[in-house]
Length: 201
Image (cartoon, rainbow, N blue to C red):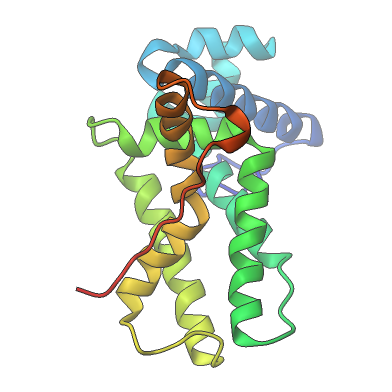
């Protein structure tokens, strides 16, 4: 699904699509490591070995490139969810969906780092990415509720927050716990685990 971002300018050749994907992935890596503000389009072009003109051909502007990077993240989450086991009890179905997203993120630390930068930095540029992730999660939650796989005791909005915190909250906060534990010279083998609970108001 990478490369399906709606602002693409035409289908292009197979070579073009390969270059487009390589540009997206290089930008993801660089933005995650250094922050978007510190990465120019020229630097992305140099990383991939293409011209700035090719990046402009595929994405138009730096904003268009950032939207394409956001699309990779949303696509990867959606792909993970599509591979979840839908059999078993309601609790097992929900747990399986959460687990595949957590596993995907654990296997792609660059996405976690990018999400941290995009969603937690106060410049507001992560709002479109957050909106896309919330929209996707809302569709998932609504589907689970319709299929009887999710409790309706809480509102759908609370369930969206609970789902996202279950999938990404521990990964976001894990480094903080590790840093605190290290600061107090705790035994690494006994580092406490995070468990996030989202309750109704």
